[in-house]
Length: 600
Ligand code: ADP
Ligand code: ZN
Image (tube, rainbow, N blue to C red; front, side):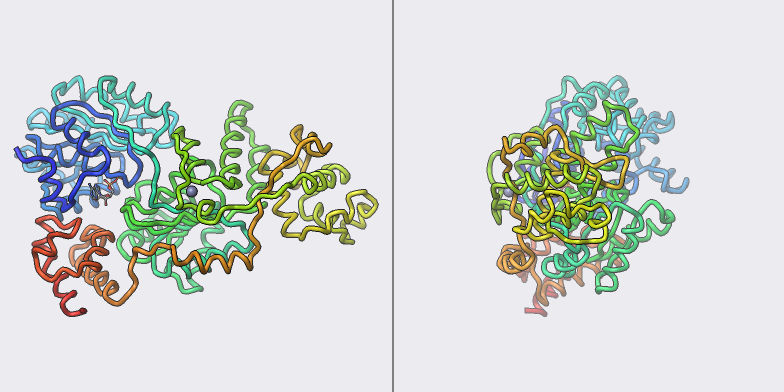
C-alpha cells in the first residue's frame, strides 16, 4: 500500500503534512471514525481525500454546499484524482452517466448533497459498491441552533447503522462546545476520536480603525495595500452596498455589489466573476460568503460592525484561505455603537434573548475598544487559551496608549445628567465646548453647569470619549427617542468621582498617516508585484479560461509565488515547487517554464 506521505507528495505536490492531518488520515485509513475541528483554510479536505484515495472503493463526501462541488471536483481532476459529484445542478443524462460510473467503481471520490444521499435510489447504488469512507463535511449543519441547520443532516446517523464497517469522518470549522456535542450526538460519533486544532488564523492581520470618513479611509487602505487584490467589503444595508460599489468603481476599482435584493441571476453573475477573475472586489451584505471557497481573498473590509464576534470571525475568516497573508480591516465609530445599542434596546425579543444578544454585543464592542492583542481577545472569546502577543494585529504592531479618563468621563456624564438625559452626542459635545448653537439657545443649555467645561479637548476627542463610554455601558441609548444618551447604574461611581477609567488614545489622523507609511513596509510583503508576476498571473488566467475553471484551480497564489521566486527552468526544478504534483507538472510545467525563460 502506498503511504499517505507519498500521495501527499506525488499527487498534491506538498512536502509535509500540516498540524494533525497525518494522524487524522491514519485514523480513517485504519477504518475508524473521526471528528475533525479545524479552522477555515486549515486543510480539512486532504484529511478525507487521501484516505479515500488509499482505501479500497469510493469515498462519499456529503456536503450541503452544492455550488462548491464543481470546484472541488475540478481541483481533484486537475490533480489526476478520479472524482465526480451528484447534485441537482446536473441534468438527468449526466446524472445517469455518473451513477453508472460510480457503479463501475470508477471514482475515488464522489460528492453528494445530503438530500440526494437519502434517496432510495442512491442508497441502492451504495449497496452495490465498495465504499472507502463517508466524509460529512460542514458537520455543524446538524446543529438545530446554528444558522446553517439542515434537517437532512440529522438523518445521517443511519449511515453507521447501515454501513457499520465504513469509517466516517465529520469535519467542521465551527468550534464551540454545544455544536460539537450536537454533532457527536446526532451523528452517533461518541466513539470517534476527536481532533481539535487551534482556531487561530495566523495569516490574518486584524486591524480596527476609528471611523472618520469611512469611504475615504477604505480607499486609502485599498490604494496603499491592495491595489489589484480580490477582497470583500461588508456593509450593513443594501443601499450602502450599492453606493459603495459604485463609488469604488468611480475610483477605478473593479467592484461588484451583492445583496439579497438583487435578482438571483445578477448575484450569480457577480459571484462567478469574483471567483473566476482576478482582482475583483465584492461589496456585500452578510448574505455573501457562505459557500465561497475562493482561496486568494486578500482582504476583508467592514464598513459597518458585524453582528457579533462569531460573525466577525466567520466573515474575516473568508480571507487568506490559502495561508498567504490577508488583512481584516474594520472601520468603527460612535455611530456604529449608538446604532447597535439602539437596535438591541428596541428589539422585540424576549428578555432572555435580549440578554444574550446584549452580551454578544458587549463582547464585540469590547473587542473593538481593547488595547490588548486582538487575536488574544478573539480566541479567548471562543474559549481558546492564547496569551501571547501575536505581532500581527494593530494593537501588537502599534501599541495603544491609554490615559486617565477620570475627569473627562465625569464631565461627559455630568453633561448628560445636566441636560436631562435626552440628547444625542452632537449636542452634548456642543454644550461641553460652550457653543451657542440654535439648539443650545432653545433649551437654554448655556445656563447648565456643564456648559463650556470641556474646552481642553477637541470635538473629535469628545467623540472618542463618548464612544468609549457607550461601548463600556457607562451610557445607554434611549430607545424611545432619537439616540439620546442616558446614565446607567454603572455611571454613578464615575460621576461621583469614586472610580477611574482608562481610555484609549485614538490616533489623530495626521499621526496615523505618518505611522502608516512606516507600516507599509511590513504589509503583505510576500506577494510580489513586478512584470514577471503579472506575466505568470496572465498565463495562469489563460490556462484557466481555456478550461473554464477559476485560476486558483490551476495553481494557488502560494505556488505561483514560489514559481516567481525560484524561477524553475527545467521540469525537475519545477516539480520541486510546493503545489506541483505529477499531474500538474505534466499539464503546466512547460508553459510556465517558457514564461520564465522568456521573461528573465
Ligand atoms: P479547509 O477545507 O480546512 O478550509 P482546505 O482543505 O481547502 O482547507 O485547505 C486550505 C489550503 O491549504 C488549500 O490551498 C490546500 O491545498 C492547502 N493545504 C492543505 N494541506 C496542506 C499541506 N499539508 N501542505 C501545503 N498546503 C496544504
Ligand atoms: Zn496581536
